[in-house]
Amino acid sequence: MTSKLTESTPTSAAIDYSPNTHPQLDPAPILQTAFAFWSSKVLLTAVEFELFTKLGDRGITGAELGVKVGLHPRGISDFFDALVAMKFLDREGEGPSAKYFNTPAGALYLDRSSPRYIGGILVMLNKRLFKFWDDLPEALRTGKPQNEVKHSQKGIFEELYEELPKLEQFMGAMTGLSCINFEALAEKFDFGKFKTFCDVGGATGLLSIEIAKKHPHLQGVSFDLPPVEPIARKHIAAAGMCERISTAAGDFFKDPLPKADVITMGMILHDWNLEKKMYLIRAAYDALAPNGALVAIEALIDDARRENVFGLLMSLNMLIEFGDAFDYSAADFRGWCSEVGFRHFEVIHLYGPTSAAIAYK
Image 1 (cartoon, one colour):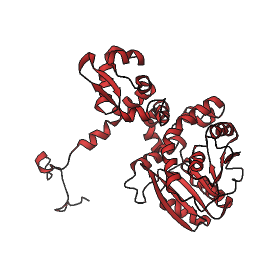
Image 2 (cartoon, one colour; image 1 turned 120 degrees about the vertical axis):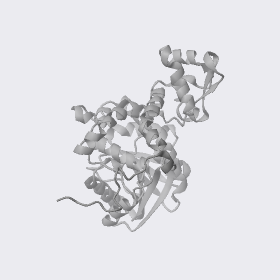
Image 3 (cartoon, rainbow, N blue to C red; image 1 turned 90 degrees about the vertical axis):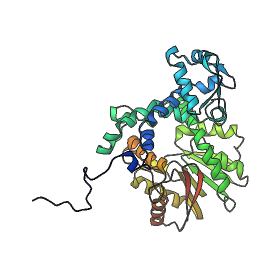
Image 4 (cartoon, one colour; image 1 turned 120 degrees about the horizontal axis):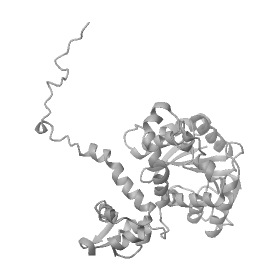
């Protein structure tokens, strides 16, 4: 039996493909996204080479900079000028005598000597995730992780937690990007009606430090696994916050969370499947004082799942890293927390794609 085409059914013969017919349909966004890995790899490679750090506050020629970075002459001008065209480097002059400079943003965020350095996460993207994302098709077909575990190697966290210096280096590298969002939370969330807080998965203690700096009436606890505690203590001491921030060691899937008026989780919930997300939300509810608040900092996916590209891509990254872990929307968070017993909710935008989802007990 054959089906008939209706008058409205498009066929290849009926569609006019001439450019003049669809002048508003520009293929540039398609091509820009398709080729985006080219520019991504150039920037990530520059950070891994410590190009911006070695350039510092000086202006030097391409040949001199190439020697500092260790480049073959063939790639020098293409590599540096591509970074100029992408607005990650500045250049004064033309030809071999031209001098390259850091842009203000490059000096602030990509020079290791800057307190705002965010290059650590970029180095990790280049060393690990760039190659793992090549297996996205397999992740989508199988639902299984595509990281070190796929190749019968130790997972990143298992390997890191074996050696304290390596763990500290990794956590320090990750703090640059988080600092922007943590500062925004300390500024925008009303801590005035609370007396105590606990940061679950506190790592170096950065979020605790930012909250305590902004709100001198608060006492805080940074809670993480035992190998992390000495790292947190070191950073808290360096910030002069030992009298106001303590540390607590434990496994949040085995041990009760420290009691507090506010419990924060910065990029924690998205690491887990729904069962474990619910476990952590219940643990937070049990540890919170009456009228306390659970604050989850994430690249929240918009409720309609149409706008926050980074949040959706981050959720795909959780598939690649962990298989059943995923990112979520504010509506998801509200539903889970309502099931546990939380009564009121709000969302505070922090920086870029990141927001704080807040549930009140």
